[in-house]
Length: 281
Image 1 (tube, rainbow, N blue to C red):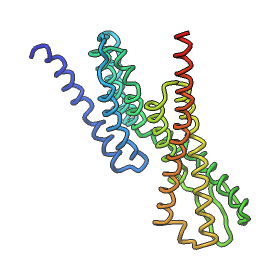
Image 2: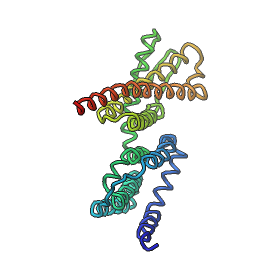
Image 3: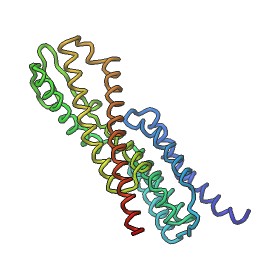
Image 4: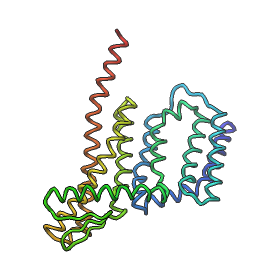
C-alpha cells in the first residue's frame, strides 16, 4: 500500500493540474470540425500504448522525469496566464511523458513514440497558425480547380480564392482550404507508417506523400464543384450535395494514402530480408 502511495499522489496531482485542458480538449474534439480527428487519435493512442505494452527491461529515469515534469508545470502555468490553449494542452502530454520516464524509463517512453505523437497531433493548432496555413491552401486549391476547369473548356477567371464562372461565382473559403483533410491524412499516414513500416525513412516518405495527395484531392473537389455548378445546377455547389462530395473525395484520399503505404510495405520487407541475409552472411 505504502509503495503505491507516491504514484497515487502523482496521478491525483496530474488530474487536478490538467483537468481543465483535458476537458477543453475533449470539448473541442466533439464540437469543432477542425479538431474532430482527435476523437479517433485519442483512443487510438491509448490502444496502441496498451498493445505495445511494457518493456521487459526498464529502468526509471528520475532526473529526466523530474525535469520534464517541471517543464510541463511551468508551461501549464505560463499558458494559463497567456490563455494559450495549444501550449496548455501540450504541457499535459509533456507531463504524461515525464511521468512515464520517471516511473518506467526513457526506453519505455521511446517505445510509446507513436501514441505520444498521435496525442500531439490530436491537439488543435492555434488559430493564428491555422489561418496562416489555410490561406495558401485556399489559393492552391483555387488554382488547381480553375486549371482543371479550363482544361475541360469551361470559361473561368481566377482572382485569389474567387473563381468566376459565367453567371456564377465560387468562393474557396477557409473551410474548403483542405487543412482539415490534410491534418487527418497526416495523422493517418503517421498511424499507418508506425504500424506497417519499420524503416523510419519510409515513414517520413509516407508523411510527405500525404501532402500532395491532400492538395490534389482538394483541387479536384473545387473542380467538381465548378463543373457541376456550370453544367448541371448551381444548387449543387452548396448544401448536402457539396458536403457529400467532400466526404466522398475524402474517402478517396484516405484510400490513396493507404495504397501508398501498402506499396511501401513491399519495400520495407525487401529491405528487412536484405539486412537479415547480410547479418547471416
